[in-house]
Length: 190
Ligand code: PRP
Image 1 (cartoon, rainbow, N blue to C red):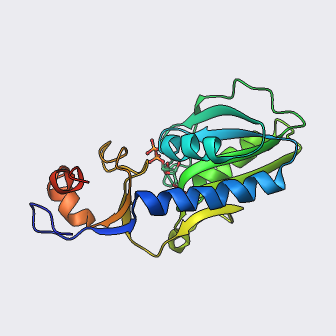
Image 2 (cartoon, rainbow, N blue to C red; image 1 turned 180 degrees about the vertical axis):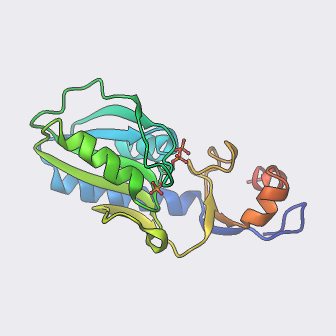
């Protein structure tokens, strides 16, 4: 697909591809958690995936969210902006991410969650991009694995844009840096 800026966008998953991917992941999570789960979404990118995942699951689901300051590998300083409201002690918890990239966010939040003594903690991500992994994180449930490419849509943003696109697309970050709105006109036709 070529947009007004003349730069290519490659659709990795259209809305039907997203739907079938979510159904597969939801079936896997459901099969592993007969007693139900607490889905813990990591704000903000996980919201579209978590909403679809919860509705596609066939077990009891409770929903909560965590939010942290952006991870800065230079300082290593991260703090919780929003903690859990639900007591997860003795419960099966599935942390839900839009993307696991370096893995630093998942590593930090897994440690936070494990301190609450869940019965079991798993990591579920819509996109897994292992090429830049800096922490020993292996997500338990993965929607799609991708190589080193920049992706937008279905929760994934560029400077706050594109999260609500009902597709996952590979974009050129150099084009977006030049014009953050470069892909909007073409994408919103779908
Ligand atoms: C993104 C994404 C994950 C995290 C993954 O969050 O939603 O939480 O980065 O990256 P990592 O594996 O390298 O740690 P971001 O800080 O961009 O916030 P957002 O969800 O609000 O977009």
